[in-house]
Length: 368
View: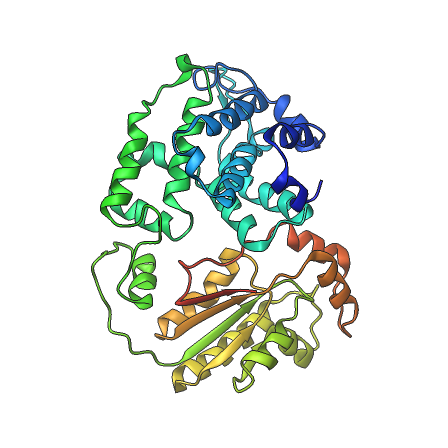
């Protein structure tokens, strides 16, 4: 089934499709800790969560897109447990550390393969990643900061509704955290005006400053006076980054890692230390002089991208991030037409690890 068919399918048909997939069979074979999940394996719990979605008081009033988002969040929220589950040799307890983080990547890959659109895919993938947060709100030093931050990554209302279904989708004897804890998430989000929308920061710079501060202040409004504008463009090889810049930012000088590699005679498979050093120095030259420019590299990993964004922020630049992701077959075709095409195996490997940018990284974000 493709995404168009899955969106229109009944819950019974969706679960039937899932049960034909290897990731689902792995879930059915994956045991869980009895204290938390006395109902049994991961797939049994997942089906219980799916059924609890339909029992939510709010379910009839949800829009079709919201229902689809919640159904596939439920389907994938524990999809990575088979990849992360371990048994403590001393206590015999079953643990699945960081299964939500890994689950984000697995969900993204599955949804990409069935043709899910980028915006919906990322909405579901991030809900999978953060699905457990509401239950732990009272353990946070700054609960308000937690709901504010998440409001720019997910819809807090959908996150709360999923948390209810997740809590109810297990044997009652295994519910070691009271459901009432989840209501604090809803109340905190409502109090901070971010239950069904992102928290309304005074300015884009106030938002980005909040996310970059070690001890953030929700009400701090920094002065909006930037040294220059920097456009960081991200996307897999062959995604059309050069073309997008030529069409949309033709006046900007461009620092391109591909061009620097060509100038220095360094292959993509060689050590990239000298390339990165040269690119960093060229960025600093523009930043020191207050010259706006574009930075063109793959930039698909959050950690790698973050090092460049940190540099731009240190010089008080206004940061725009543009992320391009055509359909994988389109991308592979465009890559094959390049003179410096990248091996298809490399592109597919990079695609499995992509982490598209979010609003917590920049002043302005475009997902193309």
